[in-house]
Image 1 (cartoon, each protein chain N blue to C red):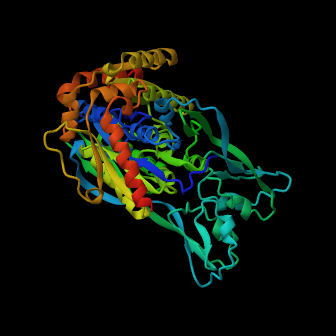
Image 2: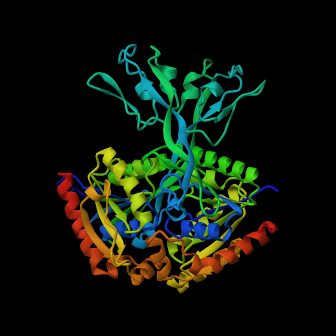
Image 3: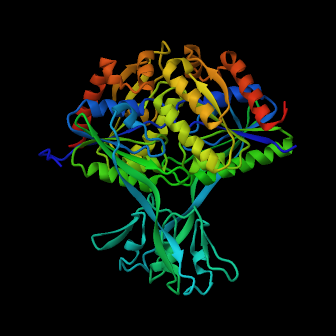
Length: 292
Length: 286
């Protein structure tokens, strides 16, 4: 059977995305492949204690190199670079590789052929084993680029592992935000679980995430975390869910024990396993499967 | 624009991990100094206005140049699609090339076309809004939903914010990748808001490494302290940063933020922390 892929998203950071992903992993133990798509600042590994089996560099695209000679500092390249990676200082052309996007405009305009493009390592990919199932994760180099492509690679690996090992579920811990890594984590998933909180910013960011899910045709359901922090806020989230047709699968109260567990790198499974069950039952109903 | 009679000071607020209190601390900084500009550079999820209460009024589009083709000049040679490094240009058979959302707006295809058959049109990717209330100018960037690259919107937002000529607070995106770098680049100093959990610390360490590599003066504000009796020590690059404040975990601050009440109105230690942060920034920026 084709594995079902669920991505945990949030829009706003810090709403409990990784926490929910960890308790879902606990509940799906042995039946899932896990994937941390928050490659920029990955956190799921802290809760899963992965034993790394294989690792490799992630080559995330090209960067320009300037060769001197033949560069004669004519400066033709400077206006061609839209990313501010080229400038002239004291009559010399200077390349700032941290700003280079590897587009190659400089190679097109340089009359001397002084630029070349070469692949740049932008991160590292890990294939691990955990107590809950195989786990694909990565680390982007600090300040690194092309995280969308890295997320795509991780999801491909997770899918391959799930098919090979006959795991019915793939669980992806997504990145915050709505830009390239978020789009890359969400596209083609069977279901997006949006973790939100009853704040004005939570609601605002949930709505933007919902627009993104609609645009990329991914069904979305909602988990309301810390619902008791604001009655007014929780009401607004519930209303938005009704209005937009997002199933609200679970509401979780604020509990200091969860925070304490997390502070000690423990999955708050004892407190949250019932909520995780509700989320999984709701997800199965939406996907019309009984994969467990 | 008013003149400060000195060079304006700008502080970027970063966090690594999301939800550590970055926007709350940004609002606190904005509310603790007269006549600042608050720049919301978290353009994927701009939330600063929700705490400051500024109505965002005037807006302007942020666009990137994307290619278009003059089908009569195009000879279907395919140079454009071979030049594009992002898979954004397709040309096959007898059809003119087609362009997709993966375009970075680099212009390489236009430069490479031997027939000069390509030209550029502006495509909106976001907008920047501005609103004034209580002496605070808010400049807010907003990425259009579905656009993959926030960096052009962040750069334009920071540029417009700093052009106000006021002391500036830049609320940066979470993470430590290119969006965060773009938000921080023009700031005099950066404040890293984190929490004493394994997650907060792991993510803040990545952000701290980026700030060090950028040569940006940085300091720590530790939020949600006091949950564990013994708190972990900060190590690595984090351990080398000055700690400006340790803010206790407070349910009332969390409840207030949820309703759009900034923590400075609820907890004097946030006001004090913001003052200390401005003082620190003015010293390192000199």
